[in-house]
Length: 437
Image (cartoon, rainbow, N blue to C red; front, side):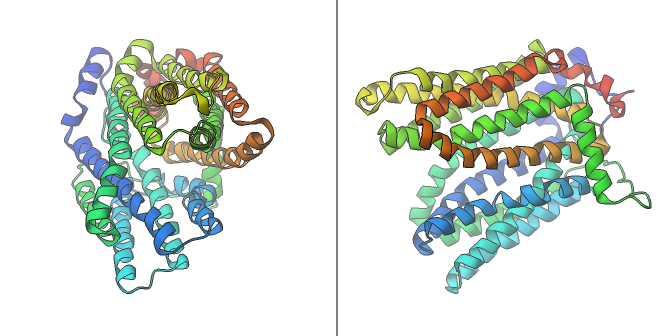
């Protein structure tokens, strides 16, 4: 259970610099990091299976892609509510073991020549549900093993390792795929999840005993209570609304960026890969600077800085006179810089955003608060991705990027014009009775 006498001021800053020295967090971070690398590596094998082994049609590919999001849309709020009634460490261990079993089934299906579209769809859907359980347990579990003053640093460390995994993992996965084949990659990821379960089981933590639901109260009441808490809270409400708007803008740029760069600007695939790598570098540096910025500026202003920086790259790409004739000498630096700044913005705001949420909300509602924000984000992203196709069709690439920059600006203005702007991590205890001594 979170220490009610969590350190403040200089003590909190000292503890935040030593977060990886906390045995419980070191185990949690290790499990999260190896799982991130395993997922990035296995992601390459999934793409190869879908395209070359199954020879999936475009419709089938879109169905398989949607299956990874579907659990969040239909089960996100329910599982979030359950995480406030269950022991989260146990949920993390069980989902890691289950993921190991499901991933281990893929090499068996390949060896038996029994892998079909429907069997792979079942695997992807099951993994999506298990990932939802893991995500819903991990965010509210972190404040139980990390002091309040260290939450930003803890999220920054997790963000750094995820960025490195997302950048280096696919390249490593491609190399291993050529050397050892897809069955080995899935078996490797299965072993990684088993190791993660062992690491998670070794975490020493005193979780609060989950309260039983009172008689006459069902899970729907828990979900509504979580939504009311999130959207009525003085600082969480603008934070949640800003995140939702940010996800709408991100759905636009995520959908249009690759097509704009590869088709409209005719940038070579290798150059596109270089630009994405710069985004990874920016994300790593942003997460590296996030704790110090959070301490100096406060949570609200650090989040605002990240939101504001997100406007810059997409506005630049929208207004600059770029086309295929500009040449790689101009296009590569511009596109790489855009990705770097966007990655930097995400690294800065994500650790401060998540850390502040975890510090503000009482433990008993952490699961529902996080699942409320996360589920609405997924719905917004899903709708935004569909609308982007219409925007590009009728307005063109750069006009669509200009709209995205405008939406990013709105996300920043929500923070700037709300009480969240002056919020500080060290003041979170004042709004969270669970943190008061």
